[in-house]
Amino acid sequence: MSDVQEPIVTAAPEIRQIIERVCQLEKNRLDRKSQGHINDDIVKIIKEEVQ
Image (tube, rainbow, N blue to C red; front, side, top):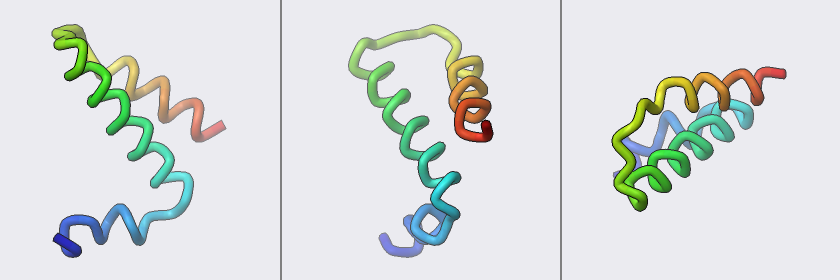
């Protein structure tokens, strides 16, 4: 399991924040059984973190 987590654990803090936010977004969408497009939401998260 540690091999799977390695890219996340060794990523820069900014990248880890993006990964965490995208994972939370996906979890929320699964909880709501949302079938909508997620790409726009991911792009928004990345743009917010880059600023």
